[in-house]
Image (cartoon, rainbow over all chains, first blue to last red):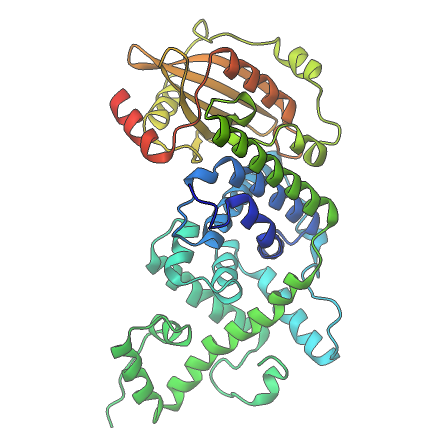
Length: 180
Length: 249
């Protein structure tokens, strides 16, 4: 084995911010997200040999992290009610946004995102934030590409409805100031 | 004028740059004179931008130092143990599974159950559970999963248990073995089972409480000690694993 391509552990470190962003979007809690990232890194290092170097590292990592998250949800569901989601309201609002107006919109979008069903939110994040292709997203979520597309389309229509984004009639520039 | 209809998914794929060239041209042509279509397309363009703008900046948030440091340590340990195995080409115990020894407890389990606590909780090694009543369907499902699923996979067994297969390896006698976790809400059982007479026979099962949903590191130390005692080889890479499992069936 050559040392020319970075190893999984090396890549992991560089990828931490992305991984954490994905984790926060999934679970709305920084505390939980950090645990999740930690556990995913552990898992990735153990399973490093199963990563095919010619495939996308980000998709591989997202998949590991998301499986852990699903696992966690499954446990939490059997264990009883969870309050993490409740107390986590504006958690993913970026701070330091200059314009109050832009910030308001981001809050709307963030709040709307949290109202979406988990399965719609995760596909939305993978494609629109992490910029995975439909195919890679399908891989991460272990679902057919057709399901990715139908979920993603539904997620976006729901989001548009929740936030009042265009939705057909008007597409004036004032609806999305500063977003482009 | 003919108005061609495009469904939402086609429009969305166009917005995301995932549509094939031929259809893209048709969409473009239709957009020139179909305002309703343009408005529908705008929903997909705008939502993508809106979500990206709202969530992307999270990446600028500094990663908490504790997390970053912990992952750096894990990475360094993994690299170091890999270097040892590469150099000496021996089955170094410390490199087994390239697992970062002891690190996880510092982060995930600050009050990690000590080895003593694990022993107390479990009654030490249970060398084989052959005396236990088989649980019928559960055992069958478990055995089927062990026959076929690759390491790293998660399989739900019943309503409350999840099987996570950790690794596949050969022991000192050349028996095919698998290490796996059975996770329940409150506890986790790490098991080493080996193939004998056409079945998976449990060699070690270690149950420990879960804290915050994760498995204490200390029980892993005991599993590793056991693996050393049976002269466990390096975990098989996925192809070798597939072949070995196919042969074993």
